[in-house]
Amino acid sequence: MDQDIAVRKALQDVRRGISEAARETGRDPEAVELIAVSKSQPASLAQAALNAGHLHFAENRVQEAQAKWPSLKTAYPDTTLHLIGPLQTNKAAAAVSVFDVIQTLDRDKLAKNLAREMDRQNRRPQIFIQVNTGDEPQKSGVRLKDVDGFIEKCLHEYTLPIVGLMCIPPVNENPALHFALLSKIGKRNSLSNFSMGMSADYQTAVRFGATHVRVGTAIFGSRV
Ligand SMILES: *Cc1c(COP(=O)(O)O)cnc(C)c1O
Image (cartoon, rainbow, N blue to C red):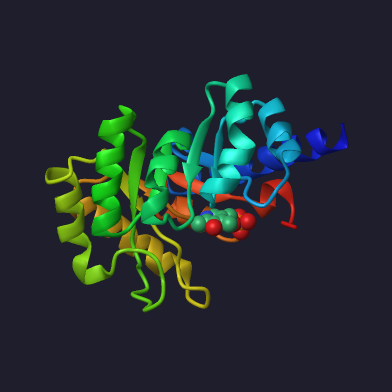
């Protein structure tokens, strides 16, 4: 099918882009996980990526993931599904049950609820803390002045499985500065996974140490 061919080729192209950027900076391309962002795309496109052997995906809404993924995950049990959109506290239970990785933890009440739900469901998705690297007032993510304390609290008070940090740079700024900042915050807190970079800037993110890049349109085309 045409769709299968197009998605397979796009995945190869993005992987090649990741490898180039990794090699330029002396990094192992295998250390960068390509996450295919299937939000707002039909299940048939996710299926095309699965047919190509791809295993890592992301959605930005809990409800959309609940509708699209349980059947795909039954058919492809090795699939890893990431949440990359804002998470409402009252959806923590659903998020813990449907996602394998939650990248958008950014506040105390949500941390508390996630910890409680993980105990209740006996399921422990990996967690990234989202950092508001631009310190933008209306934006998701932990503010810079709070980030070290929040990481500490999540690890030691809530004993959450925090594995790394995630950021979405401000739209009109050079993303490289934000990628560098995220990596610096991670290093001083002994965190070694960095989810950063999207279709437009994933190569820059890899040069600055991304271990996870979140790529949607460059794989699946524009969203409806
Ligand atoms: C939509 C989205 C992406 C993917 O964006 P593209 O530009 O389509 O690659 C990555 N990260 C987050 C948080 C998103 O919401």
